[in-house]
Image 1 (cartoon, rainbow, N blue to C red):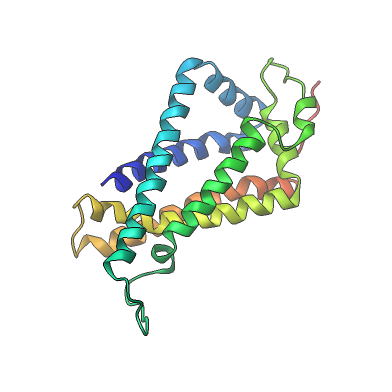
Image 2: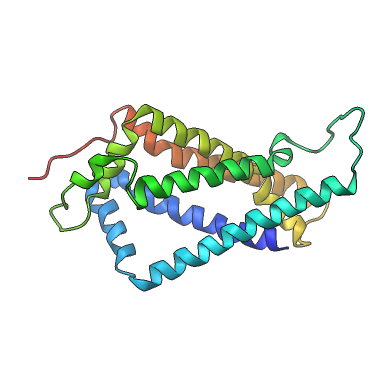
Length: 216
């Protein structure tokens, strides 16, 4: 239940975060204005960040506990494994989740604390006086290694969500035999839509669709 509820909260955050980041395609004014609106929340923003951190910790901790309990329930390994319903996504939930955690830490160091790229400290404000988040994102994703790591991590996140987005219905007792296949398909579609949405940003920077703009 805890894994399911915290998973729902994190999914809602991932959706909101994507909608905010996609504003980069609308231009610097949009993405920089969005970032400024978040900063204008002041202490409330830090309360939200703290709550999200607690949710992430709880989700990871109880997911690991579930894996341990499942292994303890059958200490003897199968002589032969033939997976009938278990998909790659469901079998790799713990591993993909931990790798995504490592990605989150790097993402925070990269864009929130700005400690991984010295060029970010040299960025001026945009013409409206907002932090130039647009240029920071373009500079950050112009590095193929950084963009490649992001896309790989997003692939693992999509793999994680392709199972988790539908499995929480079962965990909460809201599933049945008729709904199960539909929810599984909807979960996969949802996860890969998120993947393409997030990956479109570094991809657009790498191919030059989104580029630095000079301030007049």
